[in-house]
Amino acid sequence: MALIKSISGIRGTIGGKVSDNLTPIDTVKFAAAYGMWLKNHTDKEKLTIILGRDARISGKMVSSLVSNTLVGLGINVVDIGLSTTPTVEVAVTLDHADGGIIITASHNPKQWNALKLLNGKGEFLNAEDGEEVLSIAENDAYLFSEVDDLGTYERKKNYINKHIQEVLNLELVDIEAIRKAKFKVVVDAVNSTGGIAIPALLAKLGVECVELYCEPNGEFPHNPEPLKEHLTDISELVVKEKADLGIVVDPDVDRLALVCEDGAMFGEEYTLVACADYVLGKTKGNTVSNLSSSRALRDVTLKHGGKYQASAVGEVNVVALMKSTNAIIGGEGNGGIIYPESHYGRDSLVGVALFLSHLATLKISCKQLRDSYPAYFMSKNKIELTPQINVDNILSTIASNYKNEDVITIDGVKINFETEWVHLRKSNTEPIIRIYTESTSQKNADELANRFIKEIESITIK
Image (cartoon, rainbow, N blue to C red; front, top):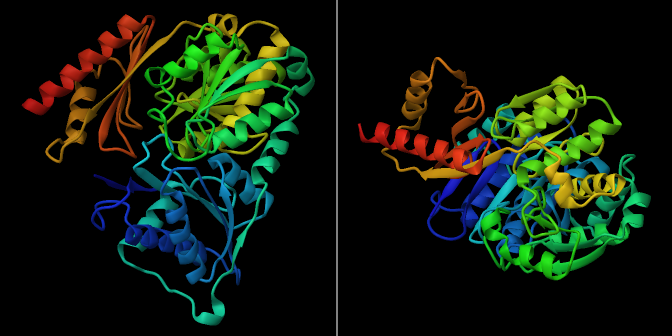
């Protein structure tokens, strides 16, 4: 199976051998490393960490290991239980905590789990901080507390409701318009914590909600990554229920996908585009997404007189560029909306509220809104890696082969052609090379992807 250590946290499959999988030993080591990193960067006598988890089956076990490890380091733990990644991010700032950990493997299948690490701003660690945590774990550089100095453990509830209220308080969330629209919506929360958060938010907005897979039991009824091929059930139910749209979130509720009233996908890439279109129409400003995201955000930003820039893939990279360019909205093309008026983290609750506000004020259908945006088509592929494959050699060879084109190498290799692009990069969370392409038709995007897959294969054979 797999254990992946990166600056953003530790991710792996449950069970198996120590250092090969996410075993209890690995969980304790990494939680301790994070706790020591926090202690090394503060003069405070007592630190407090917010802890939350998604609904996957191993979550309770992993959460217990993490909380007790932190208590052993003399750190106070506030456990908010079943939650979402953005809820934990918001809770860190609401409670003025010193950091946070979310127990979730995001879109990965149920055998996976992970520790996502936050700083005192409720944001993911940057590369430098992440490397320090990894170094502490590698060297077992922990110092646990004596009995009189142990931390405390406390459970707190209702943080999802607090998060919802924070969303409702946002100036651009038009609650009155949404209520007047009388939307009917189908929600697929893949039996995780989105099944708690999204229906509760919709109830506050006066939206009729038809629940599909909203029982937070961790038994994912389909692959939890919100891609078209995994979402046939909600597509059919939207049509059957004559709903205005469908809402899909991943297990930790930081990715948002939408389904139009005819059962067609709105497109993960266009979730951010639509929310940005709404925000930019109300407030002038700039936007940011990553190199693997659609050109449609650039087009919409330019239409509103703003400036668009692209960062390396990864939420922390998007956030850093958003801050440096004063972007008013940004995110990633996987359905991740980052709206600084709320907080610097991908947040599906914010995305739902902004999208419904946009749809309600325009008084058009979901399909009509989608058709109003530039028509780009993406192909997302991957190649499994083996230890024999030299990824750096592959990427440098590709970059050299296309040196006469517009080539960007800040994160893998992205090649911009006149009407299309390809982005090749090694994943930070899985042993794969991701191959993203975008063109003016699905056929062209698929053909471009297949062309580069063959080129990569030819390089590895040599």
